[in-house]
Every structure is written in structure tokens, then in C-alpha cells.
Length: 345
Ligand SMILES: Nc1ncnc2c1ncn2[C@@H]1O[C@H](COP(=O)(O)OP(=O)(O)OP(=O)(O)O)[C@@H](O)[C@H]1O
Image 1 (cartoon, rainbow, N blue to C red):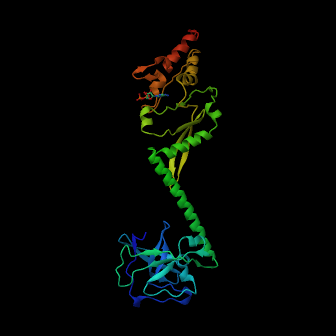
Image 2 (cartoon, rainbow, N blue to C red):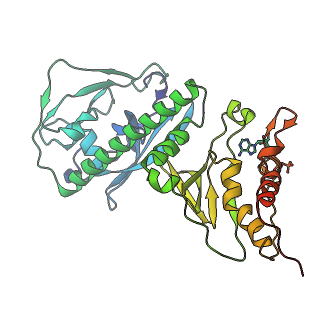
């Protein structure tokens, strides 16, 4: 931290304003400890003091860039207990030193260890290495009654620390994912977890086909070799005999990922373990039988290229050879051959 930060040049002494006593030692031109949103504590120069709003504007230089922010006085006193203490002598206008509370003060203000920060003298050019922090051997004991505002700050601070811990865990997990070479590992794990919680009896159950004029079935194709090599995600689950679920990976504002599951209902849904025979049994076979009862029927496969229409209707491929005996066409012919020829008038 010290090597990256330096303070802006202090304004001239004549420009320093003294404030009312109940604001103790807060003045434009003094250096105070501030805490950044990422938890870092460092020194910054007070460049504006708004008494009516009980806040100050502080500035510092980071990697050559001048930065600033507004901070309320409660937070300033919390991080700079010496300023809040009535016994503490006023800070020297030379800005030679001041005490800075570490972040642990926020958690335990009764046993706070003071940090002394050495600031370059006015005639020294502030350099990146000029800001050093020393920890004194003697701890400074302070007892202060917490105001509701301070308690609120402490609460917020704790919540922030919790969020940061969570973020670190997520980042570590992501790093691990990258390490294992699968950027989809985390979401894959969530989908697996979801599938494990499903009622397996519902998944394998096959409800008898209802007698409807139109029957729409969906078949899930397993990932092929190329998709597996590419570590593509299998985002389809068949949780029951007529539902297809699509898992969508979403991200919250705090970067945690979660699954959003969309469900689609059909007359029948086959998972990737279903065989052509099973698909036939629940789709075309009842149609063949109805034809032999003088009915008329149409069966067709519809889907994106590569989704498995030929595999289902014509039979599984082994390289360039297709096992036609296991396709819907062939299975339909086989059942037709076993049925009695209808009486034609
Ligand atoms: N249920 C399944 N089990 C195993 N492999 C499958 C399954 N469904 C499809 N495949 C495989 O996926 C690949 C694509 O399938 P298929 O050729 O049947 O798709 P398609 O829908 O007919 O594509 P196109 O519209 O381009 O003709 C094939 O290699 C096939 O063997």
C-alpha cells in the first residue's frame, strides 16, 4: 500500500482553518486515516470541511492520480481515535505525525493498537516511498461509548467483510475452475447438485400414453464427443416423464452464480438414456395399431440439425453404418407385420 500511495501537497499554513471546539481537531490541511471500499486504510489530506453536513472531503494521490472522496465525521473519528479523544493534543500543523486506528478498531474499539504514520515535511517532496506506517510497541487503550451511528457503521462494516469473504471464496473457486481447465465447472457442479436432489422415481416413471389426437414428445440427445471435448455444458434435465428443464446460468450483483430453471411441458419427455425402442413404444407404435383399425396417422421428427432426427427415425449410426433395425421406420414395419391385416371393403 505504502509504495502506491502518496499525499497531495499540503495547502499553505495560512489557508488552514480552525474549526469549532466540538469538532475537536478536524481541520483543512491535516492528514487522517481513511478506509477505502476495498478495506485498505491509508492517509489522506482533508481539503474541505463541511461543518453543516458533518463531513470532510479528503484527497490523496494513487499511482500518480489525484483521488478524493467525502467522508462523514463519525467515520473519520472511528478511524482516527486520537482526533476524537479530548485528551489527545492537537495535531501538529507540520503534519509530522498522527495516529491512525487500524481496521480492527472498528471491531474492537476498547483494545485498539495505534499506528503512527510519518508524513513528509512541508518542504519535502512527497514521493511514493515517503508514506511509512510504524506499529508502536505500547497499545493504546480507549474506552468510548458507542453512538447508534457508530454501531450502524460497525454493522455495515461487518456485512461488508462478510461480502468480501464470500467474494474471495467465489474467486478462489473460479481460479480452481480455471486451474482444472473447465470454466463451466461451477455451473456444472450446480446442475449436478440439482439433479441429485431430484426424485429419481419420478424421472424413471413411464406414464401410460393417453389417447390424444396430437401427441408431442421430446427426446434429449446426449452430448457428443466433440461437445464433451469442448467441455460444453449439459443444460437439459428431464425431471419427470413429461417435463423438460433448461438450466440457465445467471449471476447476481455480488458475482455469485445461480441457476435459473425454465420448465417446458410436453406429452412425453425422454432423457438421454432412452432407447429407440422405448421412444417407438410411446410414439409410433400406437399409431401403427390405429392404422390397422382403419385410422389415419402421421409421425414426423422435427428439430435442429444434429438433434437426433435421423438417429431416432432411421436408427443409430456407427461411423458411416446405420443400424436401420433400431429406427422408428423399421420398428413400425416389424410391428405392422405382426398385426392382422385390416378388412378392406
Ligand atoms: N439419442 C441419441 N443417442 C446417441 N447419439 C445420438 C442420439 N441422437 C443423436 N445422436 C447422434 O448425434 C448425431 C446427430 O444426430 P442426427 O444425424 O440423427 O441428427 P439430425 O437431427 O438428423 O441432423 P440433421 O438435421 O442435420 O440431419 C449423430 O452422430 C447421432 O448418432
